[in-house]
Length: 614
Image (cartoon, rainbow, N blue to C red):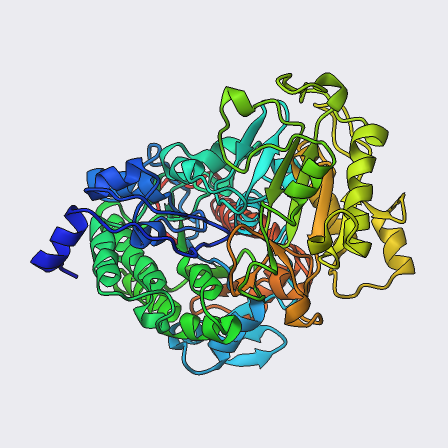
């Protein structure tokens, strides 16, 4: 789309400041957007246009101003390492990573007759997740929290958050006193968004190898935040920004139909860049195609779940078709494995500041301040005047992490706490847990928090460097193991809570999930007027809980022209009907290992290094 002369003048001249509620894919927040004289200057000021925000793939696929800089200077493509080769029999795999696509919503779209590309690839529906050419695991679950950065990190490493080092969309590292917010939820600071692309923020935070590093060969990634170890990383081209700016100037907003939304622009403009890269560099062994617009659109629409189905039918499916058509034209689709996966689903919520628990009055931030605890400001970086905080809070949508210092090391203001040592359980942790429990039950000290919290988790702290203990439930002043609590208080809505909380909290990086964890009151069985979430900006849907609606994710394996029964056998080896999304890495690895092993068995030796599919 080309801008008119008047539109270019509007972009290149001053853009009126505006205060807007915010579009996000997990809590990205912008307030009092500043005037800027140009697109590049806008980046220096944390962004001044809603279109730039959307072009940033707010969910973590790309960084706001970093993305603008990169696409203006490099055409939206980054070579990450020399191309490797795979043996003769190495397969080709395409992973369509659908941010925020819930299992039920995706399957509804596929079965509606309005998503012919995905449905056609799967073939005839034979029931119970089995299709002619593919298999859809019926009960796959996300890790906790069911949020973008934690889930994609687990998906593309095969390791749980407590072991891979990335525990949420925001987290705090005690040893370095650093706050990470690759997808801001509580903070109003976009610093880390730029680092996702410019500095591989997520890759550097990961303590384990990614899928790309584990399989070797050539891996290409489009937009996704987890790309460490890939050979080629593509973002959107400058024309994407121009098109979205034109939409913005024309007054079009995210509330439009799926096809006309700014989210659709973002997803749509990423595919031509991806195809250009394939034409230039060849088809990789593994191609990841990330669509962040699904999540963005769902957060911003009044009827989120039906709207998501419409988006999957009208926007996502045609884009999937374009990628598949390219493979067909190159005569390489037959025999290629295709996967559809998602990081989390969505739960509808009230779009107001009563149900969105922010960082000011009536929130955990204010409650801790009332206890005399100095709380870190909600921002990525703090000045030396503000670095003597005694508590840190990170939001994850339906969850919140609270990190506490040993306050005996910093009792007076101006004394920096010794965060390298753990807090005292009885004197630092328990008083905060008790105050939160009282506020939730009776409104004591903070009436606005009454009835907003479902469960409070805590545990005995350990010395830094030691594996953290698993979380327990703080109930009536006592720590109760999760399994024991569930035996006494049936909660079928909290799916596999004991195991998934252990994945989050028990491990070498488990302390990055806080010393206290709050689970907000939510769920599909709870009236929408009684659902709450931790986020600085209200939305129409949220995620991050242990509920099935936002934790039930699709893991669909297809082989073009292949057998659905064979795909079912492959998936079931890795988790029967209920695999964790962590199984994706192991599933893809098994495809490569199996192919290489078969080739060697047939030839009696190592295969040649030609790069073709089996």
